[in-house]
Image (cartoon, helix red, strand yellow):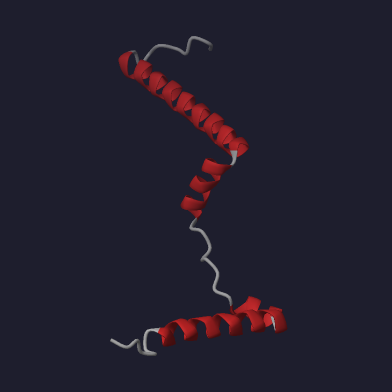
Length: 94
């Protein structure tokens, strides 16, 4: 069998398009920058999760705030439970 040109045409076309892109980027950098697709903006919840994964200072701050909220919630639950058991009792610190 004799090789045909058909398999080489897409490769040559891709190479020509790539060369044209390089030339255009060099010749018109601002226009090409404006035409370059960019990743969409991160959605807020996922942006915060990604920041926690990559930023150790933010992760430490988040963990400290989360720990404080858990302690505060637990203290509120204990207070509610004490009032449910003995509704007439005063607070120990009051």
